[in-house]
Image (cartoon, rainbow, N blue to C red; front, side):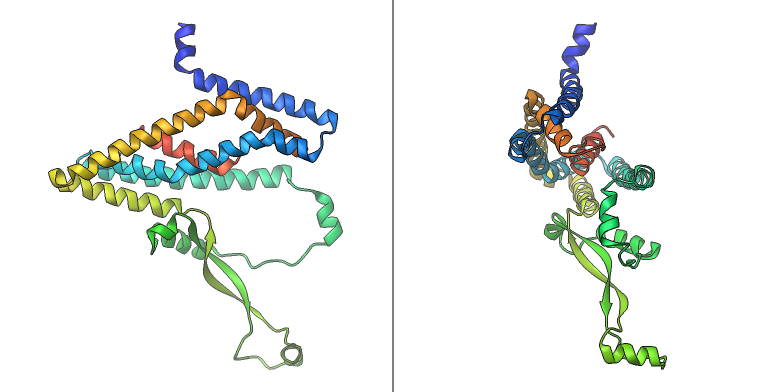
Length: 281
């Protein structure tokens, strides 16, 4: 039974072993004071691995959701679409809470930076309402192609007021110096894939395909085959990772950081984990 279990879960076992060995070898390697070039060379195979994983994110989202929903009836596809959106929102909330907790607990970063440059200026905090509106804007992107590499985010930008309601010596002095500004919210596009918008579009696309029936069978077959091809490529990449590439990636990160947990591109791994688990709904 143990041999059968190992054969079925060989990829998982190799991944865990690679991570554990990488952590140990990384901290041992820090004792030898390796040069920056040596660390870069050790980390380079892991960098290639992460680039390949990032390459698969968008095709995996599109092919998995559309092929899965298009082969179900309207009631089942609607339920699956709701679960997919709920799963994404829930995991995002958990990730935010976990990140805030870790920041408040371990205080990552170099404390000498704050000592050298001072406290700095306090930035305007985006309100809860603006965050919620950004979530709705990202849910319904105005351009699906743009949603693959940009997302909406509200930021506060300094603006010089044209009309001054209050009249005081301090305000007049600030106007004369040209230093009077107010912080105004501005909706801007920032780098990063709008995963929620892409998921909503793919869910809608898949549900409509399922309702068209025989008329859309050619399109359904296309996305079903595309899903199989993408999954085959993902498995090839994962087996490539287990060929000591993941070990080298962890070693490289362990050599670069001090007194921090070793991680390999958390956002990419979380997104891939979410997408792969959507297939089990």
